[in-house]
Length: 190
Ligand code: AMP
Image (cartoon, rainbow, N blue to C red; front, side):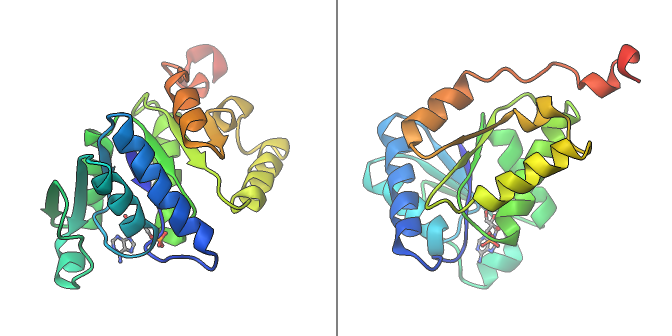
C-alpha cells in the first residue's frame, strides 16, 4: 500500500498518532508500506508504526532530498532516484493501492495525480483518503461543488474512498472496481 502524507507533524498531535496507527495496521495485516522515504512528520510516524510492528517499509526518495538528510535510515529498503518524477512513477508502479493522509502541497499533488491517472485509464488501482480530525472535509465539499458545476464526473468523484478507520478504509478500497475505460473516452460518450 502506498501512503502519501505530510512531511510535517501538523498542528494537532492526533495526526502523528494516526499516521503511526495506520503504519501499524498495515504491518499487522501483512501489507508492505511504500512511501516517500522521509523521517519527519506524518511520514516518519507512518514508517515507525509499521517498522515497530515488524512490517516492511519501502521508501523512495530523490537524491536531492536524501542529500538534505531527511531520509529515514532504518527502512527495509530505500530507493534513491534522480527526480521527483521518477519517484512518483516508482511509487505508482510498486504499489497495489494508494491512500492519502492529511498533508500539504506534496500530498495533494500526489493524490490528485494518482486520481487523474485513474480517470485516464492509466491504472486500475484503488485510492482513498484516511480522514483524521475532519481535515479533508473542506476539500470534499469543494470536490462535490466541482461535480455539481459539471467539472468532475460523479463516477470519478465516487472512486475516492474516504474513511476514518484504517480497517474499513482498506476493505472498501479493496472492494472498488474502477471502470476499465474512462467513459468519456468511449466512442458513445464523445
Ligand atoms: P507535504 O504534504 O507538502 O508535506 O509533502 C509530503 C509529500 O511530498 C510526501 O508524500 C513526499 O512524497 C513529498 N515530500 C515533501 N517534502 C518531503 C520531505 N522533506 N521528505 C520526503 N518527502 C517529502
